[in-house]
Amino acid sequence: METSTRREFLQQTGVGLAVATLGGSWEGTQAATDAVGGLPPHRPLEVPGVHAYPAEHSLHAGETLQLHVSASVPYDLAICRLGPRFDDPAGEEVLAEFLAQSPAPHPIHPGSYIYVHKSLSEAVHSLSVELWIRPWYISGTQAILSQYNHPDQCSLALMVNAKGQIVFYLGDGGKYHADGEHISPAKSLHVPQPKGPLNIRWQHLVAVWDGQVKRIYVDGRKVAEWRWEGKVNWSAVPLRWGAAGEAGKASHFLDADLAMPTIYSRSLTEEEIRQRFADKGLTVPKDASLLGCWPLQEEKGEHVADISAHQRHGRIINQGTWMIGGPSFDANVPRFGDYDPAKDTKRGHGLRLASDDLYDCRWPVRHTWKIPEDAKPGLYVARFRFEYGKTERYQYVTFIVKRSKNRPPAPLLVLAATNTWRAYSSTPFAIPPAPRKQVWGTGGITNGPTNPPAFSFYRAHAAGQGTLQLGLRMPWPVASPYVLYGGPTEYSHLARAERPLHVWLEQNGYPYDIISDYDLHKQPDLLRSYRAVIIVGHNEYWSIPMYEGLRQYLQGGGQVINLSG
View 1 (cartoon, rainbow, N blue to C red):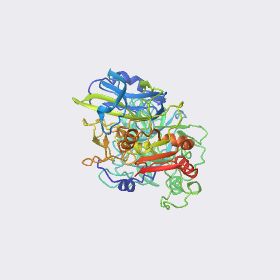
View 2: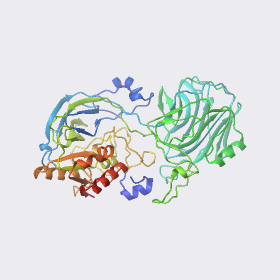
View 3: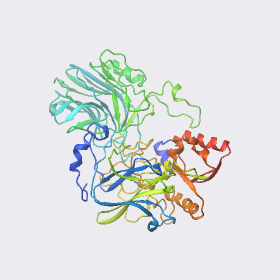
View 4: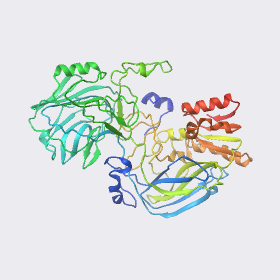
């Protein structure tokens, strides 16, 4: 991916301020992945190499580090405190070793969708599916709605492909039958093309079956119809918005925004469809034939309520993205004005889905290490050494050790800019290059061989969606103490940029404590225990509690040394 400046990226994406593996086997982990981490069965994706993340990114001395690891190759692991000299791997203080570790690969499960456990079961002789959809770049054929597990349990599927064709399948709940599938003409639905501009827009989509004829309507206009007098029986599989089943696992994930998805047990008339199109998704339908309607009014969390009498409530898998507004929302509001979304009667509600959404790898803990009670505060790493592609490589997993809860505070507190490290963490599943010093730009480096999720606040999702959130239980190799941002100048702006301060303080005999941004977010008043707070590196991502904690600390007579830029 080409890198871009921060300003260019924000302008392009709308981000707000703010395979073959070498060694190891994936076969033994397959059964465990079918419902891993509480997920319903979900298509797995292998991530070759060695990847890891800590359960907590900062811990007190005396607490236990837990490392979640996926490794397709053998490795040696050393737990180290970074040494008293800058850029000196030989000076890393080894505190524990786990040598000759065998491969233990674990897949990831990207892709967001709405899972509805209480699937359709009522006898139907006609049917309508209505929703608003705003597609991003579509690859292959992606599911909009399904009660469908190909090839053996196929009842209903509504899909879209890269050509803008709508696929409408109805069946008897048994094996897939080609005569139950009909495909509309190309460009029935506007779908951005990868080589063209990302011109997304909301469209009203209705699929109708009256018992004899199937019809597709887009923005109130009929775009396709076919005669089909088959029988619809419901297979005992989940109802899914944004995914369909393939061999028992959720797959065919959708890259699109959804609003007001609704299912009726009757065929809507053309006049009703035109009225619903004109309504722009603002009015919840009041109809006795509702089989399910999800207004998406929650705007947070994983629960999605069905307002029909059937209570087919949904659960969002892999989060999705809330607070994007609906089809009637006018985004042209002053950037720093007094706009209040709660008072905007035409904002509407939408949910953004992405085929690469992933915020928690859900890997098991493989290694634990009890941090000594007398461990010095500072930056520590889990250093993995392994061979991939016949080349020795290192993977650094950075974490923070805070002072023991049983020790008094030091005079100085250093704030590590961990929010920023996470913000720039593009290509978290990349295979690290052989040199320890590596340039990791805003777009990351070459992605992993299976093309896993690579998004960050400076790299969009694979289908073009701007990144508005990031997960903590993910690898962050960009936080390595040897990662560069500029090549010839050896300039850094993440963890490595903060190391010179730590080295200088230690060399000059200044005791200090250190915390992460998240520690300050959770406990804003902890600053009161220190005579001075040092902000260093590229600390640009602050929550309101962090800001308020620092403001109150200053108002109370605290001192801040701001070395951040």
